[in-house]
Image 1 (spheres, rainbow, N blue to C red):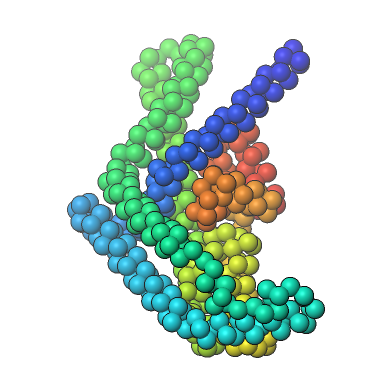
Image 2 (cartoon, helix red, strand yellow):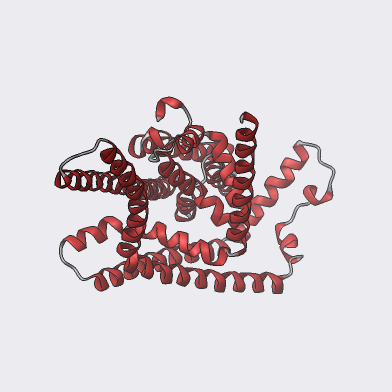
Length: 384
């Protein structure tokens, strides 16, 4: 009997692993569909507080959806104009930055006694002349078209998510509630019949009471999961946005060029813990070396960025989101690698929010196996 139980558990384990691999393959192959869908769902959670407020004010759903699209389009247009203008300004100032970069690379090569002529006589202009501009321009054009198409696809999904979220919510709730209640009703009915209740009316009332109670419990659990996901997505998005704005203002005050671009990097890359934070800190530091041609100034920029990221992501984020949602560092690394493999850069950016959402769902489950998985995903048992 023990051997059979062990064999069944082993079979279930390998079936689960195979199922997860198949799901990963499907997600990778159909990334052009699933990425816009997931981003649209995240966008829905971001707009949820505004939409709920407008719904309470009896604003028609069509107007709410149009308003969401207008706000999204305005933000995307404004952010795009700012980034493009900054990149054009950077291109105009490239010769001056190029001369500084040439001097830094050559001095660095001499200090380290590097004999390679490429570094000894480094010239950015000559290096750029070797590039295939036709291929580069074609790649940029293709990337731009794909990006515009992806944005439109996200908005397309967003319209349907907003329009159908009530129906989807009720369908999912009814499926899980009905399935669970059906099992509970059978047990209650069997228990009451075994007790040989004499009054059929009492029997029906007791059965109805238990059924309504089970429905309420499961509906409350579903609402709790939804609310926690919504709070997490909004809080993470808001913290990253505030950190990006503060970084832009601080770097502008410090005299670093293109502060808005560096603030955008802070907003985006800090969706990737540790790795993204390091990239968002190193890039302004390296640019400061070129712009100021001073190690002290570059270190000052790095210190400013480190302070902002420490306050935002090591102090404010745990306080706002809650330490209960903290994830195991090893799990974070694995999630970044796995989602990065499946969906590339976009997968790396949304890997931790997706993992946190999965953990929220598991932590609200009453299954001891799913709770065990939730415990494995936690940074410490005391946080549960």
